[in-house]
Length: 377
Image (tube, rainbow, N blue to C red):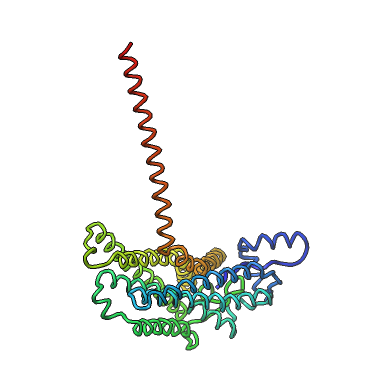
């Protein structure tokens, strides 16, 4: 999905200057209500959205090619399951970026919208469902990958018996199915998708007129997403501690080859990168959406509606960054890149150490020379 920028306004030169600044700041409450009542959004250039979409597609395609080559190389090894999960995650991110981005760019190019808090239509239902579906899938997959690696690191024999390619594909199908079922709940009147400020994207109704079903839907969505992040954190922590203990005790030499240990370390490092990226990018939208829905349902949001709209648009922009940053986890945190970084760091450390030792040797030589000269005197 794309980062949603606020559209420009047309009119006099002074108004055009103000609208240019509005691309980077959120309007205050009276201006927001004016836009909503007007029912139309002026034309805006889709350049920023198009650039974001192009970069996201490019990065995801590059990461997908890297993962496909690695999967062909490790097809019969324990890393194949991880690579299958990772490839599916990147492919899902790519699909979400293209579909959501195309819908958002269409809204920008049309420059029209309806009431951003009450009205909805077929395109809004589809975009809202895609937002929920492509939001939950990567978080579920990140959790499943962390659990799979935790089992592989702590119980390698049990992992070899239970985890197979066929079962991995079944798990992926279940993840997509569960996310799809959650996204389709509004079709059965269990929640509502509505236009969100500034009218270019749709999400669960959280800012105005929130009912009990909407609140339950927000709690379900945020609860599943945050639970996935928490589970991934626990599994990655266990895997990391296990690998560190094994390396310190050097007990894995007889049971695992050096290549296997290196693969485990690489996968855990990548999983930590995925987890950190997902937490940073998705937590704001999940937390702000839940807080906004709770206050709207209790009727205490009126005075802070503009603030929560600003927080929501910030949250969705950060969530959009997740699909752009995820591929870089696989591009940058590969074993070859990590080895290169380690060698450069080690070389710099050894260079600094040699300079320090040389300086100490020169200082000590100077003191010895001074001492000998004083003794002669």
